[in-house]
Length: 486
Image 1: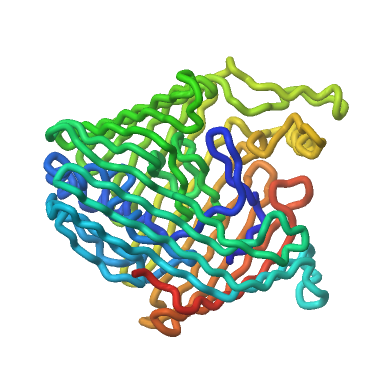
Image 2 (image 1 turned 90 degrees about the vertical axis):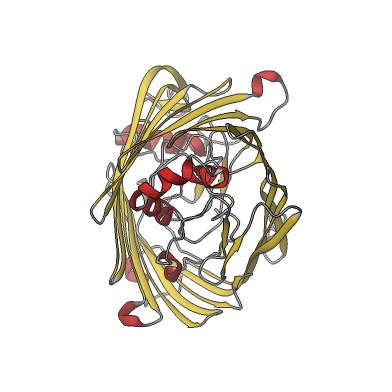
């Protein structure tokens, strides 16, 4: 359980949801692998379909491993294994063993996953001065159980089916007292891989498609159904139901998607394309999405290695927006107009860097995000928030005020195996530079046994209403028992 005093929901292309799933950090390791071993990747990409497909969203490797709900700092520094063309890897992060499997062995079905159980407590105070002197304004004690299960079935050299499901023990939304719980089951991935000779490789079904390269913010991630939550950047992001065609071109790659989510008539179909070009130690990506209900969008991404630093950046250009925006202040509610803007051009951008070293085991990441859809004017921002509270049909919905500032920044420092012990610590900061609010979140983790981990943490929010984050202090404590991969 992690405390957060910032935005508590995630929004995708046209939906919002609460409570993201939590996973162990794979994005940093993937970026490090792609930058530091770019020469090896060049050789493998032209001859290996499984490796080439994993370059984009890695379902055969990282996704096959069921992820846990707590960050595994030990797994951050696991030695990366470069796959040979005849090999796929399933790595149950941190707690499971790495298993090498020959995909050419026909009629093979592998099962695996991860189980998590823990006792969690969280306490929140709305004012700094109440900490230690008054009872918490909110308190939560719970036993959490969750599991991730996957299967990987390879019927032949050229045909594979993969599926992953998540099961969580959560409060019953129909119980107003919050005393009843139920098991919530989600099919997270379900797709098949097949190919046309050695030229085009297909994936059909529900699949992940992480286009972005940002750590805390990713405007270029156009296909995922939810955006990155900066307070939970390691959470897996659900992907669409789609058909993907991949065509390797030497060391480069091109992708074409047919998006079929919520398909009821032909105009509901969406199309997306992406290309990745490798130049030395730099990888540049280009892409775009067209769909009837959405404005057209195009992206550029870039990653590069510079010594011990991994650099990354994204650009998103779009004409118009699906969001309802307030452009002129007025007297609430009648005189304030919130409408879609389908004519103006918007350019979103983010840049960042990651520093990683193994002596000590340290990861430092920093990122800046420019959001042209935010409100630089506090008056307009306040009116947007007020309109979002009007019932029953607010003209402003959560998607319209997601990241309602113009400038954001975030940073994190993680240190594992402190002084050759089983202690790990981290601290992160996410700030809205437009209104001066933000959240600082420290944590400490102690692995008592392989399957027993204790952790404490918290979140200190700063800002004043109606800032995106307001003054608060949250404390969390958890004991993970019998959790691990299998």
